[in-house]
Image 1 (cartoon, rainbow, N blue to C red):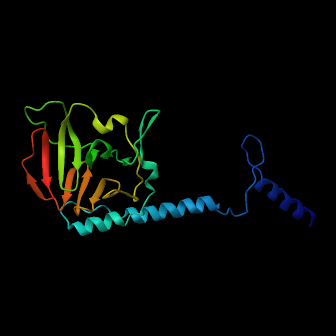
Image 2: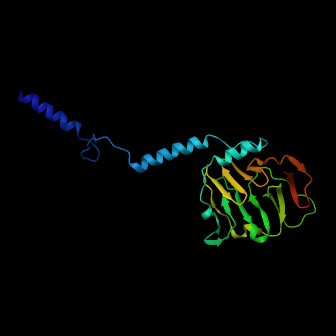
Length: 229
């Protein structure tokens, strides 16, 4: 009986000891309960993934479909988008709006200088080529959208409104409302609607697509492409 007890004790000691640096290695038997923060983070990730599962509609679909997708993004407070950032310098834009998408598209309004529309700088894979006989620096990824037309590619003598830098990042699957506009971005594209004109534009590396602006016209001098809404 005593031999059996000693043998059992020896086996227990061996099971609780490891050969790592000669120190004892204990087995944790108490189950670990996820913290509230971890649970919340997991739930948020799942919700975001579920929302992101619906990509932005392609260009050319009915304008109502584009608006429905944009409005499905929860609204974000626009107060943080009234500034532009360039390095460590912050510029107050007043009533104007500036934002940047996670994909790198940066957009800004410039009503205080008389421009009623939204301008965006997009990294197009194949931007419109530089027209002949133009002055200034050619910006093939500069898009102007005022609701009545979409202009893609233009010449500029200076950075214009973007001299102050760029705006705060607009998170995936949120929507930002300002003036007549509302915008939402997914992993690949930015969609913006102009409610006053009932028109919208889709911007991605593949190019600029339009909703209710399907008629392409001969652009004015210094403009790459133009679509009329």
